[in-house]
Length: 358
Image 1 (cartoon, rainbow, N blue to C red):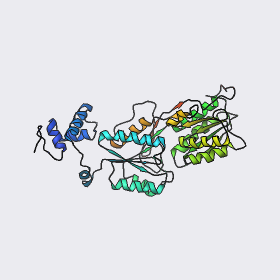
Image 2: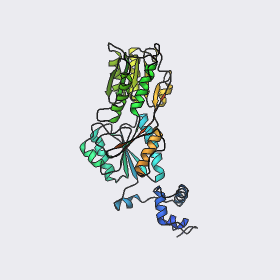
Image 3: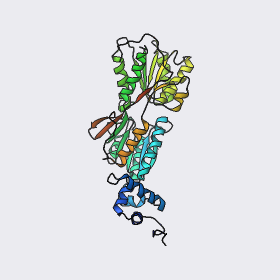
Image 4: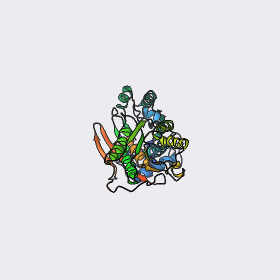
């Protein structure tokens, strides 16, 4: 049986779409796989017809032939974290037009769990993996990832081969620290997430230390801990009860900021009267809490869309924005996206500004 366009009933194939539109089988295939060889107008026309006819990609057949499935894995540490949940949503939106489906896998920053997820995605012949790696990655995990298309997102591990898409972390904490310095603060502490094997912890600490190093009377203090609210609470309780209490605090994670605010409440400190602080990332509650929390705003959508393109169009070229920093790695490239400081009411001036601070 055929419909009014002469297309047979049952499973719609690429050949059916090609015959209906009067184009070649190869053109339809390339358009549905978002090939740069096909114009955007042709892609739109072919995708519209595919949707109208009810075309469903035969992923199982493709996998049986030894090809990749239509799955893209995203291995992330914590789906409850605003930052990662937002990235997951944008990634899913970004891969959908290419006929791909995002599958979430939560590592909980556990290397064993991360390995299990990589094994399963490899077994499913995933087209690629976007991963926010754990600090203590197992050697077996990094070996398996070398056999797959991988993009590291947000943070990177030295044992993983592939492109890196991240924010300009050192610039972010340098910006936060200099903001507090410009308001007269000298006793500025840094509370950051990360570990020595991950880029984020090192780069954010580097930005804070470089800003403090240029001020003779600055009193630095810092702690690197896993980015969870309870850790932020315990670490900030120690800092705020110390002999030399900070008047300003730079925080490297919105999850840690939750713990800091809990500590301030228990100790009886008021933000910004007793403590000025600058957070990282900008979940909705940052705007709603008290006078609003000054924070580093991240280009989440841009980073996620670019990471998605690097999975399904690895040779599509680089980003258009001139302020994205590109570094050559031994195996791949690093793309660092710019950030900006969003000032709200969590910081106050405490003394005359030192005009030498830049």
